[in-house]
Image 1 (cartoon, rainbow, N blue to C red):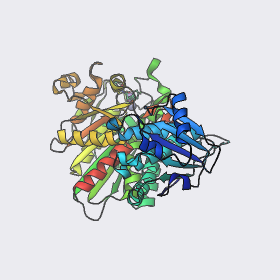
Image 2 (cartoon, rainbow, N blue to C red; image 1 turned 30 degrees about the vertical axis):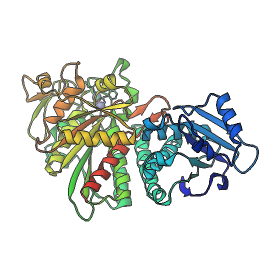
Image 3 (tube, protein in one colour; image 1 turned 180 degrees about the horizontal axis):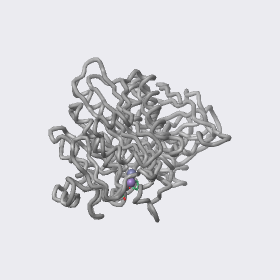
Length: 495
Ligand code: BES
Ligand code: MN
Ligand code: ZN
């Protein structure tokens, strides 16, 4: 998809289909923009007839008989004073769905000045692209619908356009990559395949890469991670990818849960636990590798970013974990595995210990960790746990700018009694109530308390059962845009 900007008047634009975002209480100035295409009285008449008032989610398609432009799709943005970047995204995606499968070229006319122009253009551009991505990799005869090839922003300032256009594709390619990793089934995306994907990133973008295989992980004493992996015929792969700029003023570690399949192990997922969906249990690793792709392309200054995934499968065989086994993590802590289905935290435990050894300024992990988080927050909001108010604010801000839902949850230390073991240092699950809090408290046991750390539970947000805003049904690519925003902001601040 090619993005460009034209500073011309609408009527000089060379395409035929226009998507126009309009604010509620549509005033003369707004309508004025269209007067060279359609008579104002006619436009007002059509708006009135269809009760189009520019309210959020309203849309109205108007055919034009004369002139170059044949169709304008008006999409409501709501009131100017309440306008959020995400309203621009939603409107752009509504407009995009109207033309999906039949138009190749679009003109986009939005009230760019309602925001910082380049932020507005990035939001609109990414919405168009992310709404229209099709994944046909697993069809034997892929029938690709006509896809949008050219998008022209009309009336956008040149400077803002340049900034925006440089970012839209790198951001969207990161999200697309994450979605494709999540959508790929477990017989296709194995731990080794995930490592190969990291290797490709390393080669394409000159990133440093270290893959620890089983033996290396044994040498590191990663007994918790390896305990999960040993029930599978597939080898675990511990992936460490690194982006480093010339000057490093800030060092960050991003960790993603990378269970390419989670059967539950001997605590097998039965009943309504949706075992067939558990290919998406590597959604955290997809977010992290997707962010790696974007960051490697955008090359932010001053900030080193490490991307870590302890990839494996949670399966059943003769050497799989028994419920009740006691394992030892790489920081020496012993864990009684009272439920083999709480495997994510076991893999993350060793990943967190490894991350701390890099002595970073902050660690953020993303994980499809608990069903309890889905019950609490649904599929549009991820749970955020951290003891660090500043990190909480930064991540919340970065997510909100990206239109990715996030909500800070309590790190209730008194619930730690729930994961006390009578025989080992810890047990891996507590009571059902507050299950995502005890999961966060479990992870905390493996983080050096002097390093700011946040845990983000994306069990609900990494997948959607229906087309939602800029996300077609399926893998959402959740997290990539938030992480990229955060890293960009840190880079900017340390300049
Ligand atoms: N991968 C699951 C969590 C999950 C559940 C993600 C539903 C997406 C949708 C995780 O490994 C798991 O099984 N967690 C258990 C923990 C429990 C045994 C304490 C859960 O949430 O049921
Ligand atoms: Mn599980
Ligand atoms: Zn899992």
